[in-house]
Amino acid sequence: MRFATLLAAAAALFIAAPQAGAQDYPSRPIRLIVAFAPGGVVDTAARVLASRLTERLNWQIVVDNRTGGNGIIGGHVASKAPADGYTWFIAHTGELAINPWVFKSIPFDYARDFTPITMVNDGPMLVVVTSSSPISSFKELVAAARTKPGQVAFGSPGTGAVNHLVMEWFANAAGVKLLHVPYKGGAPAVTAVAQGDVLVTAAGLPGVLPHLNLKRVKVLGVTTARRWDFGRDWTPVQEAGIPGVDASIWAGLFVPRGVPAAMVNKLYAEVATTLKHPEVKERFAALGSEPVTMPPAEFAKRVAQDAERYKKLVQTVGLEAQ
Image 1 (tube, rainbow, N blue to C red):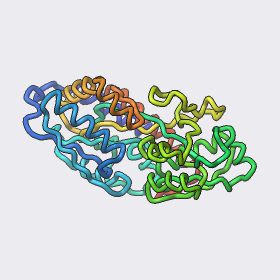
Image 2 (image 1 turned 180 degrees about the vertical axis):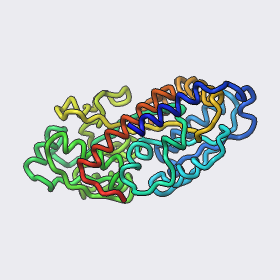
Image 3 (image 1 turned 90 degrees about the vertical axis):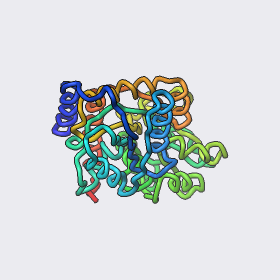
Image 4 (image 1 turned 90 degrees about the horizontal axis):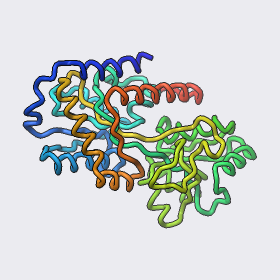
């Protein structure tokens, strides 16, 4: 509740503040901090957004990759930046909704130190198995897990990653026990499935697509409650009779708390307009996601809701803070 209240209050505060200082904004380059390496889902989303904003408005936006610490290093850098609207931070589900529950010490607080602008994009994780497996559906995966409790192995990018937690969520909802095998990143986890080292993993489309194209893996379905336009044949987990599971990977735009309301409002308006462009939708679809134009207050509520859901899941799984 504290997390939700702080985020909602931050959004409301800046919307209600005086609207001065935005008319000549921006008058110099903007730094867009990404807490992950170039080429990943969050980085690519940031570059699609920055590129289209530059084309539309001639804004100078420089993407600054500050990697390490599961997103914590980049978040720390962004939280210490001046609140003048010239530093943006793009973060995803794991950094905001999961990290607070799996790390003992984070040198900043998302709700206290940032103001939400909007969700940028949202997409499912694909649950995949090696192509040679006889398992071809969620129901068959559950049946296999019931036959061999705690022996069906799934890979993840590491303990506490959203991919890890969604598979634990799936197992808990299905009433089965899976064996977690952590790897050093999403790509190695998918490769392990393709090679048959583990049976299954959950991953975003970009990490799955190379193996999917080579028919090394096959898709059982998606981790969300709904279907997506770029993959209408992929079965949502709830349609397979697994109740309650609805996990996506979203990325959202934030600025350091204290940025004037006029700038916050202008940023939301311009980003929302940009995200509606057909080219942006097409480019995000290639990433396995859809653009989202979610106002600051609504986005703050979504972050808080996801944070509460993952907090309960971390407690249920019994993860110890690192």
